[in-house]
Image (cartoon, rainbow, N blue to C red; front, side):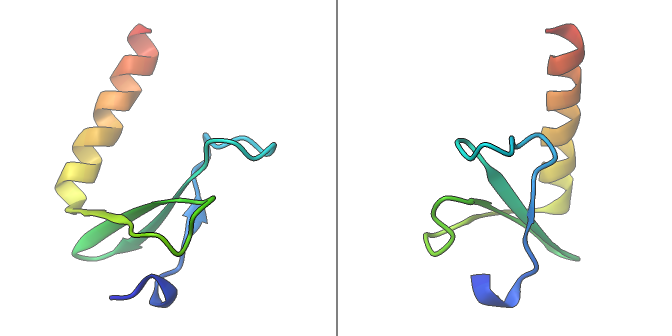
Length: 65
């Protein structure tokens, strides 16, 4: 699936001032992650279970941080 065929949304943790922004596009079998400053560059694709594990780890990190 090409980047142009995906529906991208910005992370809720990305600031409105630009800078470090992550965009995500979901698909039933894959989660696509890219740098919003370089939307035409290659993006990272992970499984939904790997994405869930990442989000859980971040939630725990923020809670314990």
